[in-house]
Length: 142
Image (tube, rainbow, N blue to C red; front, side, top):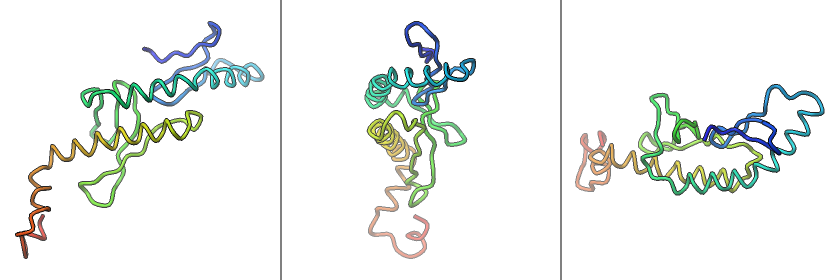
């Protein structure tokens, strides 16, 4: 899937993850017409893609050293600071035209992925935080 979007055989742009980039060669009235037609054609595609993403195994999702969240070759979000260092939040890269329900589904999936990843990578530290018997300096460290 190269993400190419066509309407009636005419190339109108590219869908990268959940963001649509219109064809740069279209201009003026033609560009507006193509954009309108492509957004109508993309509505169901955004929902199908969101369902596929939501049901994708964790192995299809990854994060970059800079905090980017990837689904295959597509950037679908990024990590942002959360309430504490072991609870990062996600910011999704979803076009407004995809709709709030698509954005929420993508956000939920990414948050589940990150929560599980943090839990697996930092399990000993998380267990220390939950240990009720720690007091004083060790408690402050955890």
